[in-house]
Length: 297
Image (cartoon, rainbow, N blue to C red; front, side, top):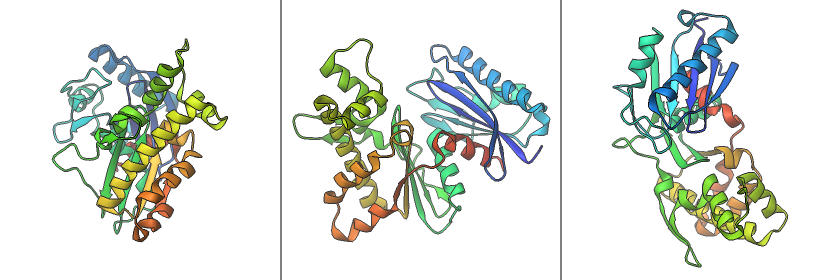
């Protein structure tokens, strides 16, 4: 079983775990709800998820090559510490040390978007001659850059595209994440409609497709702001490939057409070829698990 790694994709809503083989195939998947209110309870859920995967596979932890773990926010990869997240209670939490105290196998820790980027890049051929960008639009917005086979990390906080400041018409102002993430779309719709219970992103986008005037305004503004974010990425990096993932895009791939329509006028003619290099993920929710697993090998 050393041809398998145990992968974890840890978020503020859920913890996903699975075995991943060297070809990127996932099996024995398990999911548990996150407990973001308390750090030890949250860690206990992670341990439970690992044990569920091992039990389903009917193997011992010594039978795997190691564990790959993706967590949100800033991480210290060398020290194995989850430094900062806005949706988990793990301020400077020693994830790797704590896991190794229970499971005596190698543990690789990285940011969850980097893990998903690695999964997408690997399954797309793992070209070391390109600049590859993975952009997630989900609970938050962020991107990860792989240039000639290596991550571009800067001083440690590179890729936080969601922090980009946006000034749009009609007084719309704030960070890209505050306008175009899933929770932002829900919150802005709720502010206009005042419905109990509130709207889900799926409901807002469905209403947009049906011509609902408020939903149309909310989604069009979100798409317009995402286009500005993509314009920044293209102008700065001119990537060979851009893959869009996260719940908002993978559940609504039809938004890519709208996004390209908003993006095209922002580009000069020499940049128009970039429109054909943008696609929506085909790995859907497994990208983070696949990347985390493959990083072990």
